Length: 363
Figure 1 (cartoon, rainbow, N blue to C red):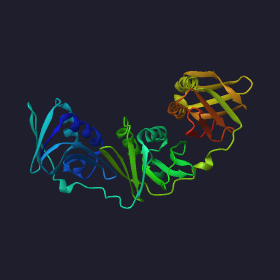
Figure 2: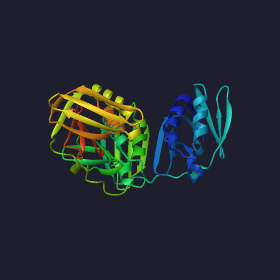
Figure 3: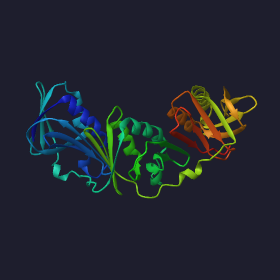
Figure 4: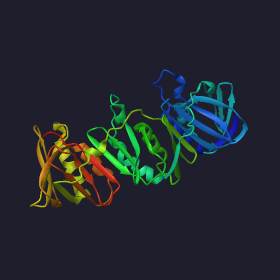
């Protein structure tokens, strides 16, 4: 392999893919990135066997070839170089990188040993604007579980509803659902939340369309020159819709900024009680108040004005509440619940595609 490319493009590609490479594996080559010439371009790939990311950049190819080199070293080294043209030349399992003032050699491993994710054949294809997919994932990924004991809950669930594709995540204590645009294709798959987070990073500033292809084992997301492939989580997602009440005895509508402020202040006093805060909604006073007690430090009650229908109280985890409120946009938000032990719903007329559910704590 012998080629020329720019420092800027190579550094950007390495920043895209290198995060997936891992040293916490019995296969040393998984700590490497694969550099490979393809269709007169240079592709840079990394994988941890569950997720693979490839970023293709323009290059002037003199001789084709492929090699793998340590991801962390390559990323840090290329990022440290000044902008301009780089000369890359492969000599067996060594990669020589030359600029006007730098001449470096990085020892690699043969590309023949690099694992490749199997191709998706005959899968389902559909497209979606990156901006819409990004908004949906940003709002639901936070609710996915980190507990590998229940792998189903560590995923983000894509599935069809009659008028749209829904994207959902839950850790059994909270649930987030976002309604994407309608798709004719049959959609039903569960992607690891780690892959969803990597996808968010990839499309963070993209205005392009995302091509989505999936079969029963894998899903592929392609946006411009970047492709992410992930193994799907096997199993049936819980029937979460039955948790969402059809109507509510207590509904409070208030400014989101006010709600965030009183929730954050109360959370300071809730640290001793595992984040437990009690929300009281008073129909007569037209107020929402949050009370938190810290036995050693004191207690706090913070209040905000609201439009209220029905009185009641519910005890929630303060961190879950603050994270949910931050996931909405717009000026107003509704807090809806049916008594102390029923699920609590957050929704907004400014953000009609998004719903967030938080299970109450036993006070």
